[in-house]
Every structure is written in structure tokens, then in C-alpha cells.
Image (tube, rainbow, N blue to C red):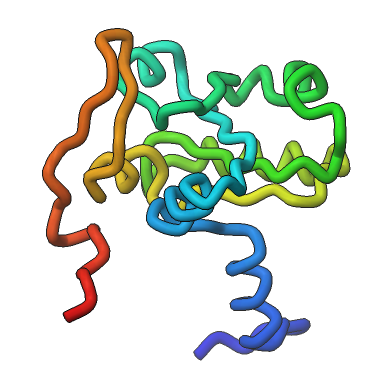
Length: 144
């Protein structure tokens, strides 16, 4: 184990993680229940064109600081940001930018668009909406 000079407690770390991240299933459930946060897709135009979360707003990462005020003038607006997947830190950078601007309810979508699609949730493209079969490696297992 690495000795850290000022470690935070495990409780504080995991509480912060839960406060600032959401997973695809929880985001889908919140939206279905009418608790619709502003969902920002911070990928490139090419990524947006390949598919996106229905109802998401495209705001590429490099434009987050300049474009967010038009979308969410209230700093308490719930915002969920996503990029490609777990190997992409674009959503982390966008969430940090929003938090540093004073936005208080920012969350990052764990697994990004990749996990959203792999869980079999609806995907929007210029051709309409579609779903793929859930990937058993990432989709929640139904209760028995």
C-alpha cells in the first residue's frame, strides 16, 4: 500500500464518487422517472453523428466553457456529461470545467456512451432510434 501524506478516508472518497458519477442504468431510471438532468455529449461531431443518448445536447469539450451558460444559466442545474467510454477522459475534463465554473450538480456518466449502448439502452442517430441487445458483460443482471 502506498503511504499518502494527506489521505482522505475511504468513506469520503466513495461518497464523493457516488455524488459525482452516475451509471447508465441509474441515468436511464432517473430520466424515466421524470428527473431529467441536462445530458451533455462532449465528443466530437463525428462521435455525435455515430450515435448518442436520446435527448442529449452536443457540446464538444473544447466549447463547454463558452456554451454552457446558454444551456444551463442556473449553476444548480443537474448536468451529466459523457464521452466515448471508460478510456476517454473528455467527460472528466468537461465535468472539472463545469465544477470550476461553479456548477454544483455535475456528474460524469461512468463508461460513457459505450456502456450506455452496451447496456441495450436507446441510441439516437440521424436515422432515428435503435437499441442493441445488452452485452452480458456490462448490462445489469435482472433480479431472479
